Each structure stands twice: as structure tokens, then as C-alpha cells.
Image (cartoon, rainbow, N blue to C red; front, side, top):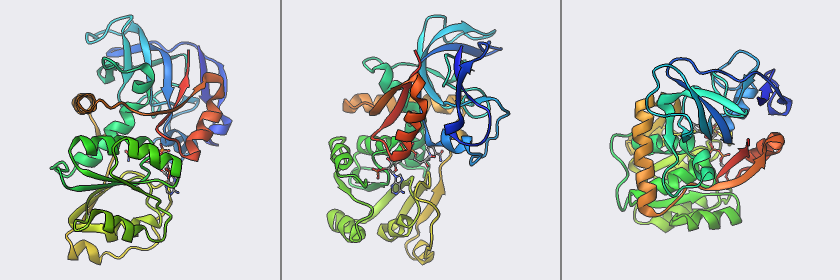
Length: 328
Ligand SMILES: NC(=O)c1ccc[n+]([C@@H]2O[C@H](COP(=O)([O-])OP(=O)(O)OC[C@H]3O[C@@H](n4cnc5c(N)ncnc54)[C@H](OP(=O)(O)O)[C@@H]3O)[C@@H](O)[C@H]2O)c1
């Protein structure tokens, strides 16, 4: 099969397109012929050894995708040869070979049918970021409710779009942040009630004026950096921040006083914590909510398989939704 091999920890620029033997499924596993693979920033971090997983080399990146089942290993009963399926978060692309290849061997327990009415593209990049967004919103034991305010940083990105759509499905008032006017307009079209530019010096005042007399109840933050302390300052009593990523770098200064004055809470999100069963039930709930709203995951661009490096460059720029690669 054709595959983008990672042969060093020197970044995605060093990936090499080559031929390798097809991987064969073991017990509980399935061989997929990949149609589409979805990219995630974690792929690029892993390729730079900036990620907890350090798979043995050569490795194949890619944690999301859609393909056709071509072979099933012993004990597999939930899918059969010829089924069209998408991949929920699992070890593929992390410790095991991933989806940037003609074929991928994945756990049968982590497969889900392409939902009725969805395109393969809509499915291909959605699971990892929507499961992350779901965990970010659900990890506090109570979901945001109608009238509560959810602030989403990096709202145009994969996790951001997932968080905006899921928070709207809960009836929340959604404030999105995007540095781009064009993407801000698209995020509004997804249902965000307000979208502001995180680099605007008046950000805090603008957000608080828009949602007055409320303050922010929940934050899904994938940016961190200098923005983090501004977000903390927008929280109301009992406000919670789900920390997903740090695209904006380290948090330079942060006054913990607000945490005790307003009983604020900050909690990390780890999509890797989903068990296969947990991912299946969260995914079913995500699909149900999107279908009920008539919404779909957002695809930024689909690149040819040969152009994986351009696809990663697009992802690094800050996409509007998911960046995909057409494998076959
Ligand atoms: N903890 C977990 O389990 C988990 C799971 C998934 C992802 N993540 C992490 O979460 C982060 C976001 O993932 P993603 O898939 O949503 O990425 P993405 O699709 O690349 O989107 C990130 C968005 O953040 C914004 N952004 C990027 N750099 C920024 C900066 N310096 N300042 C302000 N905004 C910035 C951009 O939006 P604008 O251009 O519109 O401003 C961009 O579209 C990544 O760091 C990823 O590794 C963590």
C-alpha cells in the first residue's frame, strides 16, 4: 500500500510517501481501505516529539478517517467486509499505524457507520474533535443549560466548531473567538450568538457588554497563552474552564485570586481518556444532537494524498473546520 511514513521525529515536513506491506488485522481488529483521512494538530506535535506518545519508527500518522472494511480479524462481529465506516478516537495514529495510508488496521470497537445523510467528508474529520468538545462541555457533571454562556476560543478550528455546535444544542448562549473576520462570519452562521477578535484590546469589555448582566459560565479553551488570564477575568461565580489546548503558547501571568473569590474551576480535557464504549455512546449523542439541529461537521479543505504536507501547512495556518486528505 501507499503510505506517508514518519521515519524521524523531525516534523511532518520529513514525512515520505512510499510503499509498505499492507497491515493485517489481528483479533478484534479490522483492515480498512482508507478513502479519507482527517488531520489534527496532535499529528504535527507527535512528529516533533512534542506529544506524550513516542511510537517506534517508522510510524504512520492519522487519527481520523473513513474507509471500507476489507478484512476482519477473529472475533469481530459488529462490522463486515464491504461496510463503509468512520473511525472514533483510538490508538491509530498514536502508538499504532494511522490513517495516512492506503490501508489501516483499527479496533473494530472504535468503528461507527457514516450517519445517514452525512457525506464521507463530514464524517472523516469529525470524531476526534467532537468527542473532545463533548468531554470539554460534559466533564463538570452538568451540561450547560439554556441561558448560560459558553465561550469558545479558537472557534473556527476543529474543536471550536464542535464546541459551538454542541453548546448551541444545549441551548446555551455562545460567544466564539476568532482572529479572522471571514471565519467569524462563518462561526456566526453556525449559530454562535457573538464572535469577537481575541486580539482586540477591548475584548473583555465587549464580551461582558454583549452578555450583560451575565458573565461567562463555561469556557472551552484550545488557545491559552496571554488570552487565558482575560478569559479567567470574564468568568462569573462558579464559572468553569475546560483546558483543551495551548495553540497560543504558555500562560504568562495568572491571578489565582479569582478562583477563590468566584469559586472558579479549571480542568484539563483528554480525549484519550475515552474508552471505546464511552466514545461510542458520546458519539451517538453527538450525532443525535447535530441531526436534531440539522447541522453537520464543517470541512475546510480536502487535499490530494500526494499533498499531505500542504494539508499540514493549511492546518497550521488555522483552518475553518477540518482539513482532510483524500487517500483514494
Ligand atoms: N486535550 C485534548 O484531548 C485535545 C483534543 C483535540 C485537540 N487538542 C488541542 O486543541 C487545540 C485545537 O485543536 P483543533 O483541532 O481545534 O485545532 P485547529 O483546527 O487547528 O483550530 C485551532 C484554532 O485556534 C485558533 N488559533 C490558533 N492559534 C492561535 C493563537 N495563537 N491565538 C489565538 N487563536 C489561535 C485558530 O482560529 P482563528 O484563526 O479563527 O483565530 C484555529 O482555527 C490544539 O492545540 C490541539 O492539539 C487537544
